[in-house]
Image 1 (cartoon, rainbow, N blue to C red):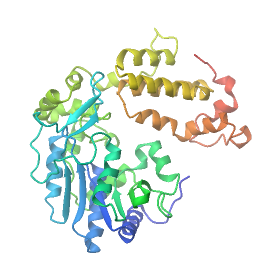
Image 2: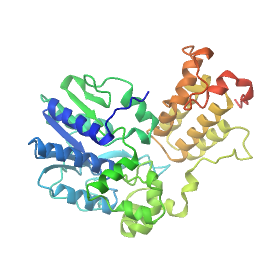
Image 3: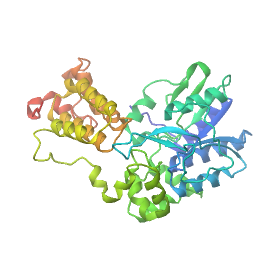
Length: 398
């Protein structure tokens, strides 16, 4: 449930950041070169300066296969004397989401030719852990702030994902705050999201109203027809990178050549279009059901045994919730998208399973929600009608 304040999102975000400086000895801002982290950094930097809390620690995990424009932009940000750069360019193992045959990529691997020269000011030795993006931040804080109450400030917004909405607003994280998560509760380490309720238009308005220098890759995306609401800047082996890999060939051809040499699977992208990675709107005629189609793709395209095992477990675990054709089709289309994008983190499936729509179905099937309790006029519950009148939608293909 959303609770609206009389204040606008900017005022609320500033209040939240002031609260963090009130309560925490160390405030570290996460930065990626994207628009959201740019706004979060500038908001926090302004307040840190007002409160005499400079220099501000700013953390970027540089994953090597980045846009050159992003690397240049981040380097310019770190030149600000008000900032203490925590620029990590260290060897680690990450998921490689652009290949169905090479599950991992080893970034900044010793003895390998890197896509870029590492910065003289970056942290190059990995004394934290070898694998695990989300776990990395917990480990960094544990090493650097073992006895200090500290927080990590992130530009994550809930508009981008229903999973984020659920995880950021469903429980208390710290005292009366829900807009965050625990890194290490025992040590007093937390992550907070002060702009979690901003829209993408709020983000761009703040950037332009305050004449903030931003990553110019966004301008190139705009001239190439990418919708403003769909612009994403991430590393180039991430599950969201496929569209960027198609764009980078035109925007940064030199970076593309380096990506093709460095990241297995990326070279095949130039022969494809983004449609090749989308789930079709209608079931291909040669398959009897969406489930059959999903299983076929998993068997043919997913070479990693752990990945396919997790897929089958997810199918078995949720088959009891396939109570209407609409739920069934949406579930298996999500499985198909997971396979096609090599989403090893299962982000797409997790978003679906934690969505308000699917949660209503789960509560109903598990006996936690009766027909009388269901408000059929609730706009976000698109499966409700199928729960009350299942005969109108049941077309099972098990």
